[in-house]
Length: 347
Image (cartoon, rainbow, N blue to C red):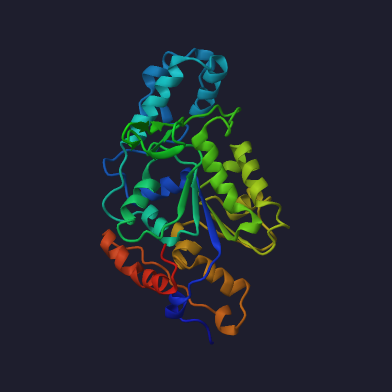
């Protein structure tokens, strides 16, 4: 059967924007595949106190405010006394625990993810950990044509200078006479999540909303390990407002990477899915990002807006999973980069 060969697909460089939204499941998947360099564990809200080492702080919280779920506990404490010094202690302890996390030397899912997209694309994450930013920094040694990032709940990797309205590595100065990047809040009361109170968070949401809309070139959206429909009504409301109704996005492709059964995922995300225009994978390596890295939108156009029979039957270019070093990962991606340079899409 005729169709675009793998090589022809590599050399096909087009537009279209791919939006990827990350939840805790993405970082968990990444660390299960390649553990954090020093063996640090990513906590859940049920073992958060023990993993992060908050037992001494929690011991000072009144019994009636405590909960097995840490997010609920924090919300109870905030509602009881929003000026409690314990809230500051908790934020500082979390910053210290997550801030010392490091990617291992070998390629992780975050390295694959960063390299699967280009500067026209966008990754938004709800995760505090520094893994996405660390992957971005180390892969810039290979190519500058990498996706823009938004940190929707803040991150331990970046701070914010209110004077300069800029973000950067925590503790760094953006100018000689000041402008220090200060840590941003990481925790918000579960029942009062207000994404308009912090400038860093506001900018992150504006960045995502500006590219998620129907008229801004987004043809693919991937949700990776994010269960927000059952935990964060405000966040889902903001996403839904930017994305629009399923009828608004009748041709765009919605993808979910999660270990939750497909029927449950369809129910959770029904406000985003139009008819059969969705894909579900229980692994990153089964996703469009891994099957056609850096050409996810080209693949979309081939399958859903093909003008010729050759385009309609396009061969995938799946990235191997067994690279032992970043150099090996970069060598594999080099033909894709070369084609982008040739096409003038290497910014």
